[in-house]
Amino acid sequence: MFKLFIWDLDNTLIGSSRLLWSAFGMVAEKYAGKRMTPEQIVSLYGPPEGAVIETIVGKNQKEEALEDFYRFYQNHHQELVDVFWEVLAIIPFLRSQGIFQAIFTSKGRRSADITLQMLQVTSLFDTVVCGDEIPRPKP
Image (tube, rainbow, N blue to C red; front, top):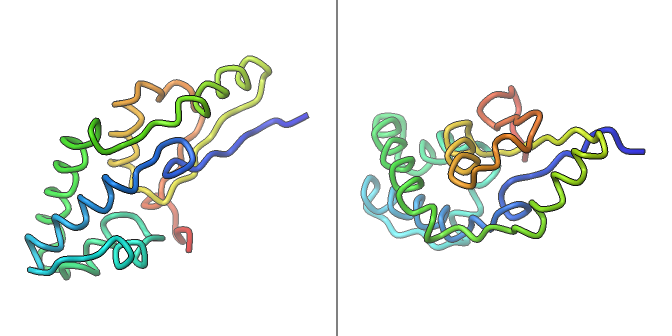
């Protein structure tokens, strides 16, 4: 019998590619004056948003660009995220069987919290571990 299920957030519980490509693309265009393709953006995935944005815009503009990223992420979440409700529907059943539920995501805490709160699913998870809370993020 399983005691714990660990879920990824992006493209497991939600389809977030369009939102991430748009948010990172906006930052690249606004702060670095360049257009990035989805493939170029995906090649930067692994570390949380702050590190990706620093790679795109540099240290000097990172904080301002990161704030813009989070504003865009929250303001466009509803229209650009596909929610995999069929997958999320499994979680209450698993919890009813005494199986703990966790999310391990490379997202930063702030964007993960935005997503979980907007979907009103925060209470489904016993633990959420984010990429900016660990010493070594996912590759």
